[in-house]
Every structure is written in structure tokens, then in C-alpha cells.
Amino acid sequence: MADNEHPSEMVSKTYLGFDFSTQRVKTIVINDNQEILHEADVQFDNDLPEYRTHGGINAHKDGMTVTAPTIMWVKALDMLMDKLRVSGADFSLVAAISGTGQQHGSVYWRVGARDTLKNLQPEKFLHDQMAMAFSITDSPVWMDSSTTLQCRNLEEKLGGAQNLADITGSRAYERFTGSQISKIYEKRKEAYKHTERISLVSSFACSIFLGDYAPIDLADGSGMNLLDINTKSWSQECLDACAPDLREKLGEAVPAHTNLGPVSAYFVDRYGFSPECAVIAFTGDNPASLAGMSLREGDIALSLGTSDSLFLWLKEPKPKLEGNILINPVDSEDYMGLLCFKNGSITRERIRDECSNGSWDIFNQLLDMTPRGNFGNIGMYYDHMEITPALKGVFRFNKSDDAVPRFTSHEVEVRALVEGQFLSKRVYAENLGYKIDSRTRVLATGGASNNLSLLQVLSDVFNAAVYVMDIANSASLGCAYRAKHGLLEGKFKDVIKAPDFKLACNPNTDAAQIYEPMVEKFRNLEECLVAGKK
Image (cartoon, rainbow, N blue to C red; front, side, top):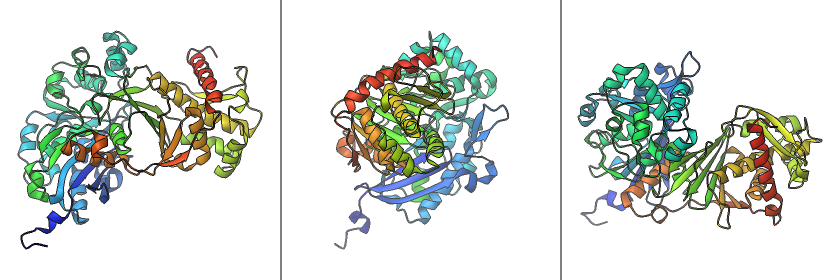
């Protein structure tokens, strides 16, 4: 090494990704080769018991209102930064920071809070300096369902649920931020009056690193029922329907890859960040996961967990009353579709227990021994009130489309469950504008993605190859990727090396012949159920 060469010059730049999720705040540090160097997390319930949260939230007595203490998230960041420092993270090498937050949650900054952000003192903790920064001290979060009245009012003012979906990508949902803001304006007018800026959880966290109010990004902003996904700007009609002066309180939205400027002097002085470290706009957790999986045009990503979530890359979306259309976080000219299905692994486990004595091996044997198409039988299993569609109960149909109380055998029951779940996902993906073609890849993650029997049915139903990769913390990893992308600019796929997905299975040669008619059969039967005709 030359005498004038600093050791740090031999080390690649690093990128920092944060995830302010419901139950914890997490972070990942990667290098230029996208190798993970450090990980840390702070769990709200265990590490911050003074806020008395359960699952990271406070459920109110009315059974519908769900909030989290805003300052708790700030104190968690104090603790997380210290954990990273103790683990040996070299903050001077961090070239860019980005992050994510639980979608739909909102933060209300008190008049004067901007000055607080700009004048943070490095010798003090953030939570001590920001204790009085919020006009609403408990932030509404995505689990809140107390705004049904505001949702119906919003849809009525916008000319109906479908018209609102055509503008914003979604019908009015109780958890969405527009209705939450509307409720606060109606119930707490003084607090709203003394609110200088309204952030999402993502832009709130970004503001701390920036030392100024960070703009909401287009991807997370399109989960508010306030952003016009066609013009990619706030819909004045939607803003006016929710609360006055809302455009000024929200600021203008920006693409998710926007470089907002250098990190706050607070982090330079307290932790040793480079003054040139860039802050890239933070986004929502679902868009961040899309980035973490390096989803590309033509792909479907399916997370098979307690609930199942499906992500789509869309060029020409078709907003419906079910599902959500968001601006794509890695290419703001495109879109992403998001579908959530509440009855995922919990329902699969119930049928496993009933039909195979709790054994996945026996469950898979029953599934494998039953022919594709299940003799024309179809099942729809909604143990809990489903999101997509809004149904609850178990519905079984024979090959003649007649409702039956039960199937003839355990193997028919097992295949009816699995085929039904994946047929439903294909139906709703196509409803949002997705087209299955020869380029389609299904990227499966989550706990059930190690079950090859399940994946084979998934491959057949979608008539597409299924790939797997065990991605932990995909949201925070996605934000580390986005930090690098925002700093280096260019197309995401040219800047970020896609993770290695392993081929799990290909569709059988007769898959299209069997399942194309079943998709239409499922669609028609479910439409009849929703309409009360079955």
C-alpha cells in the first residue's frame, strides 16, 4: 500500500437500508457486491417496553382504532444506530441511505418541527430532541379500521368506488391515509390546524436522516387514495374531499429513486457519516420488497406465509375494486399490482390437520396422487373474512358447478384447497391487467415456498416456471439496493445485480389445457358467490 493511501480507499462503498415495520425497525448494510455486511434490529415490544405496545401497536378499546407512539419509532432508531456502531459498522463508508416504512401509517409534524429537524444537536439523542415535534402523538397505522364513514364519503364525493380506483389505483380502504387524515380533521381540528407537515411512516423516517421534511415518494404515496396514478401527482379532487390545505401539508411527491441530498449534519457529527452520503427517498414496505426481489417486467412474486401476498409488474394497469395499483418503486413510468389474501398458510394448515393428521408429508402425498384438475371439483376456503374477495366460509363445487357439502375423499379436499388458492390468485392478477406469457416467472418466497408439491400446482395453474430464493428481510435489503440505485442512477436492472433464484419446477405440458377452463370456471363461480347467487 502506498504511504499516502488510506485503508478505507481499499474498501468498497457501502449502502444502508432501513425498514420501519410494524413490530420492529431493522437495517442492513451491503457493499458494492451486494454482500450483506451488517444486520441489526430493535423490537418495539421487547426493547421498548415503556410504550406498552403489543405487536408494535396499541389497539384501542373501540376495537377499530389502532395506533403506535410516533416517538417510539424515533427512540428505536437511536437504539438501532448504537447497535450498528457496536457491531463495527463503518459509517464513513456509507455512500447512500434509503429505507421503507409500514404502508398507510401517517405522522403529523407540529408547526416548528422543521426547525427542530434542521438544528438537531449531535451530543443528544434524537428522541429527547423530538419529543415535542408531533401534533398527533399516536400515529394511525395500517391495522386501523375506524374510518368506514370517511371511506364511504370519499367514494361518494369521487363518483363511486370504481371511479376512485381509476384515479388512485384503489377503492377507499379504512387503512389508507386519505381517510385517516379526514378523520383527524373532523375529530381533532385544532391538532390538524397546528400540523405543519403530514408524512407517511417512510417519509417521516427519511426526514430524520435528511434533517428536513422529506417528500413522499410516488410508490408509497399511491397507497393513500390521494395520488392520481395516471398523472403521478396529487389529485386535487381527492385532497379536497379529505381535508383543507392538504396539498401544502403533504408537499409534492417524487419518484422513489430520487436523490434528496446529503445526510443531516447530525449523523455526520454523531456517527461519522461522510458529508457526501446521499439520502434516497424512502418508500413503503411492499414496494421495497419488490425491489428486494429484483422483480422485472413479466414476473409475478408470491409470498406464501400466514397470509399470501402477490406482487405484479404492470405496464398498463386496470384498477378494480379488489387489489391495489401502486406506482412502481424502481421505474416510476410503470406500475406494480398488490394483492393480499388473508387465508394463506393458516388455512392450509387447518386442512393438513384435518386430512393428513398434521403431516405435510401425507398432505403432499394426497396432493400428488390426485390428477390435475381434480376431476372438475373446485373449492374456495375462506376461514377468515377474506380481503380479496370479501367472503367468509368454505364453498365446494362438483364438476357440474353444483354446490356440495363435502368432497368424497381427503385427496380431493387437499387438491381443491391448493388449486382453489392458486386459481384465485391468477384470476385477480389477470383482473388487474396481468397477462401470462412465455416470459412469465413466478418467484415464490415465504415459509411454504419450500414445499415442492405446492409449487408444482402453482406452476401448473399459472402455466409458468416457478423459482425460489430464501430472502430474509427483503424490504430492508430492497432499500439498500434502492440506495445504490438512487446514487448511481440509470435503470435498476443495470445497476443492481439480480439475486439468484433457483428453478423449482416447470409446468406440465398439459397445464394450459387443464387450467385455462378452470380459471374461467373459478371466476364465474366466485362472481356468483359474491353476488349471492350460489
